[in-house]
Image 1 (cartoon, rainbow, N blue to C red):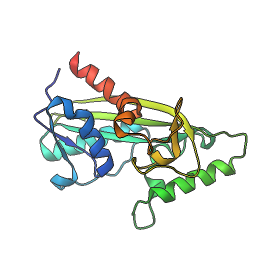
Image 2 (cartoon, helix red, strand yellow; image 1 turned 90 degrees about the vertical axis):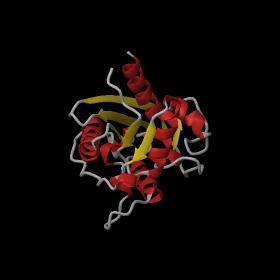
Image 3 (tube, one colour; image 1 turned 60 degrees about the vertical axis):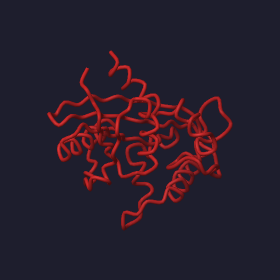
Length: 202
């Protein structure tokens, strides 16, 4: 097992994602610092899979900081849209200037789902790829998923991204309506983290 701590770069500029990852790592006494706090740039995501992009981001932060780095690439895949927006989930939220508005992104997804017709259904799943990179170039990657369906209109204020329109299988409230601790127990990120932590403990 390779040591991580005591300091780990979280290769994201997304405050909500940074908060969730810090919460998940809280029991392990690792100081988590966001890429933005270190003025690390966001690399262009040129991969064709979630793991491709997570590895790209983790390697870039580890190289530039000289510290181990953990990157997450995640998004929502909608069955009626043949897996879209998928790795382009964040881009769905961007305007021409690159500003992100997930309210706009959710509206776009819902419009496309409705355009797919009533038989297309509302099934969807979140995917999270986690990549842990060291400055020497070594990388370990893990992928987690959570399945559910889309609802409209969006509900809840506790989540971020597409959380207000996603209800996990077996639940009746969106990810933005449930307590964050409950989400952490069942989310795609929690699934990926469970695999990462199992590897660390092996």
